[in-house]
Image 1: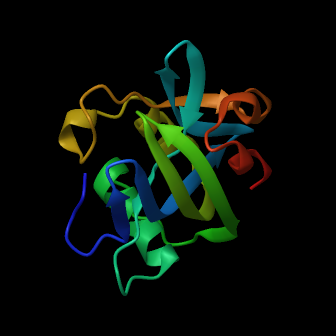
Image 2: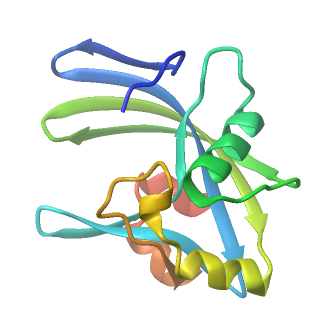
Length: 148
């Protein structure tokens, strides 16, 4: 959903560009993901959202962690920038993803596994799961996030 000052542009009805901050949260060799289906394909995505104009990628990642997961993350590690091209619901997308990583505690991992999504800025059908890093690399979207 477009919010005020998001760096997200619908160029025309068939093309979109945006800059997103994404979080790769890890614990005990696992990654927090949202399993999804796109047609008959299984895929996984990681938490994140649009960077706002004038906001650093790290600040955006921290804001998204708070808004979507209820987490206050003090230490994030920048793991790279991913440029992604894909088509979603008939719209060609060009994304620049600013990727940040954080290792979370056992307690935080348990909280995230049972997160009550209705309390946060998330679609009602969102479900988080911890999955092994090796399993995630085959289905993560965009594909290039598996190298981050």
